Length: 322
Image (cartoon, rainbow, N blue to C red; front, side, top):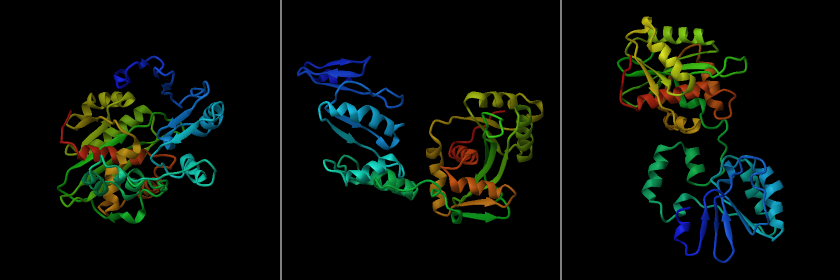
């Protein structure tokens, strides 16, 4: 909006997110989040950014935007990074078959303002599927294809003399169909092997969850830091555990979680793809592998989140709170 003030004669109106120009034209920014939010008068041009990530796109386009373009025989531009084979893929595919439509696909390297070294750095860091989608503008199927079972090695015993942490992903509800409370114990060897040593998982009411977390933390010992997300009901769990006399000497830590589930999983997804992940043989293995290899389309992703939280803790400087 501040750029509009630099245009002679332009009138920006913050409340409506509209800019009126001296020649009578106007530009308005709207959200597609709520039904009916895009209805309005006839339009000359519609630009939808991040189309693949636009909620209720089909409804918004068919019932609100397309009719508004008819009054003036307006045009539409759809811009987006792909997101699997969803509605944006269908639109892209159909554009090549319809008169008056055109489709274009350009990777990030075609952008002269982005340093090629930055792209190469991202290639080395990101999982290949994510890189192909985000930087190569390819339509790829992420569902059930992010993690592959052959990437994980089974070991009989957890390596010693390395730093372990355990992150707890707490269930917000205890209904039968609700998420699980999961605590994943993860460590990193000097050679870069990420080891999932143990996963505690169950649907427990609050008092039972406190008991299980406390007992697990005592078995882990004072050398294993216990992480709990610093938000909502998790704060209450952290306060309860740190005030429990029986848990004196057990290090608990609040962990700030600020990104989405897929973004949080990317660091260890990249390591798994490089065959640098292992898990210790145990009764939890089958359920853990099934969930990980179905992510992000799995019904439950608590075990994935727990490992992501632990990996985040390992990447941070050790800090102990009692």
